[in-house]
Image (cartoon, helix red, strand yellow):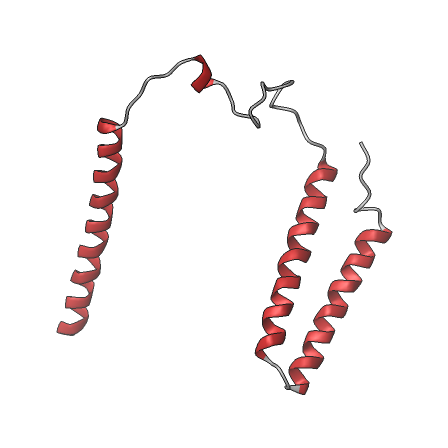
Amino acid sequence: MPAESTHAFIFLLGAVIAAVAFVGLVLGANALLSPRKPNANKLEPYECGMPPAGNPHVRLPLRFASIAVLFVIFDVESVLLFAVATRIRGDLAGGIAILGFAALLAFGLLYAWRTGALQWRW
């Protein structure tokens, strides 16, 4: 092992040890110095300034999760389309690739729509 890589490893090890020590110091200081005066109002769950209504542990249907996943997928991919489109401005091959990707997204949205994945039913 060359001397330079040994020094780099020692520096990295020291940085990791310093980071762990700093996190421990901050968590320890928080545990020792933070004020704790619990009362009924502080221990109650906060819900828009109103008292909670109903059980907070309600099971959501699987439909909710599938719509949430579809939203995240299409939201992230549409943001990616804008970022890539600004990067490859004027490039014909890149434009064709973006159009193909957008067509694939449109096909996925059409498929989700046709199979009823976007309909909200309880």
